[in-house]
Image (cartoon, rainbow, N blue to C red):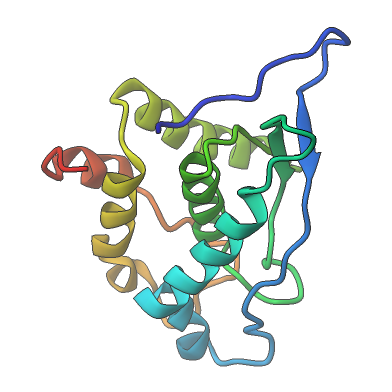
Length: 165
């Protein structure tokens, strides 16, 4: 599967569902501890949670998923990482994703990444490997704010990986 936008219904609205699921809570953790969310066991745990939440077919229909900054508020998750994980989970579950954003800069950043993924028909596996291999920790200062961008250049990283499923 690759990434796509949710279809529009007869009422000119995105066809979608809303789901709820928990995330790892990094509240009260030091910045170093919060960076643990980029470690593979934590990435895999969150990805599995999102996949299970998204892999439900209601009424025989495979509608789009409406979501947002899951695990980013009081749980102190990094928005860009959570976006990437939900994008991966939705694509693997073969569900379109409607990601609800409150700022235009995030819409542009997230949209830019999705455009690269769509243009080059990047598979879920390739994007997952790129996310795991991306030198996240090199990009962070000691005092990384919770909303820092993690994938500046991730599109280049994705495209540099061999085309393996």
